[in-house]
Length: 96
Image (cartoon, rainbow, N blue to C red; front, top):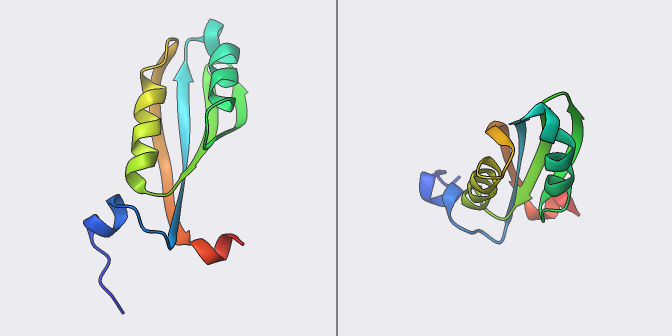
């Protein structure tokens, strides 16, 4: 059994796939527009939005990619905060 290190998590590994859930807090009057923009982003899926909260999942090849996407979201016009709730890595073959 190999030891899982921070380097393994943050660097690309062809045998891993990462998914996280996040809650995005948007200005209430911009929530629908922000949700639509999120839905158009590669690797992002919008599951629900109400008032100022948007629940999403983000998928990608590394934890670092998920973090980059979350940072991009947090810098969007109308977004007040974007917080990761959960992150999971699984072997690529488990997705087939």
